Amino acid sequence: MIKLLNQAKAWLTCYAKNLLHHVPTGLDGVARVGARQIYILPTRTGLMFGSVLLLMLLGSLNYQNNLGLLFTFFLASVGLVAMHHAWFNLLGIAVQARGGPPVFSGETAMIDVSLLAEGRRARHDIQARKGHDTALPVHVPGGNQRRVSLGLPTTRRGLLTIETMTIETQHPMRLFRAWCYIATDASTLIYPAPARHAPDPGYAAGDARLPDRTGGEGADDYLGSRNYRHGDSPRQIDWKAFARERGLVVKQFGGDQGQEVWIDWSRLAAPDPEVRLGLLTRQILDVSESGVRFGLRLPGAVEGLAQGAAHVQRCLTRLALFDHAHATDPVR
Picture 1 (cartoon, rainbow, N blue to C red):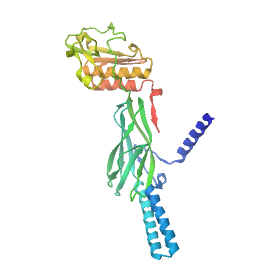
Picture 2 (cartoon, rainbow, N blue to C red; picture 1 turned 180 degrees about the vertical axis):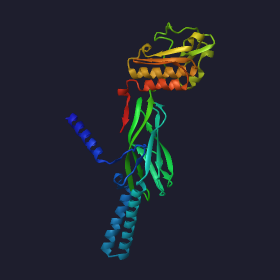
Picture 3 (cartoon, helix red, strand yellow; picture 1 turned 90 degrees about the horizontal axis):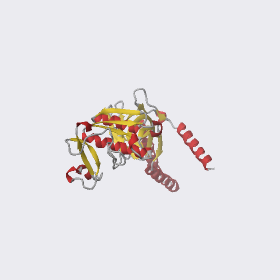
Picture 4 (cartoon, rainbow, N blue to C red; picture 1 turned 60 degrees about the vertical axis):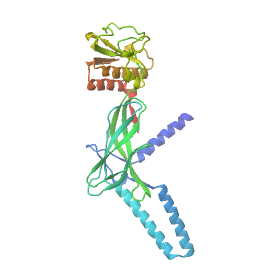
């Protein structure tokens, strides 16, 4: 029974979406709002305004007050003009949505929305909305554009795609809400959330030295960091990491042969793939701060030895899109 109800709910949702007129995105990536793609309903203020008009109409008819009838019809005409202007405020506006820079899972992903008022007519109190997340209303002068940022919470790694968003207005008088649904192809990359602590890439889970990593502690070159062990010198503690609430970690130094580090999926014993990706993310961030060359080994993919911000971004992108079929998170 529950399965049938879920199937019926999914069918009704799909049917309702097909009935809605979405503003398509053109070849230039811009969606232009047409006349048959705008919806309009009264707001709470508009409902109260209509209720007052109804009471005024009944009272004027009951007491045969012509002046009251005149004032009632005047206010009703003002409401109709406000409804027309709310619809006209969205008509013809051009919208373009683009994904923001990559963020880590759990952070807020930003979507950049451009609003263009084509022609000489200005647009007032235009808002971009996605679910419960709403940008501040903006005024768009005629022939100009305004950009707003829409923040979206993230819960998992992968490619966050924004399939639809809402553009709305309550101008003028906030008696009516006019809105339209914009179809977009904006997307933002979400990196795995880094773990608070991770084993040093040069050590196995049992804290044993790996054969391809040489050099001892106490030389000149920085190799990375590891968890604090009893007896370590306070001068080797990474106090900056401690201030970032990552616990006590110790800086390691070694010879020239220790300047190349391999961050390997197979060296971690975490059973959950997402936990293992978080550990790899932490290792990449830790090693990148040391300035040494490092590489990344994943099942079916290898990122060669390199260093720098571009290399870090490539490695984090591989982690974000690892097993991409299960990592994509569309937002409808």
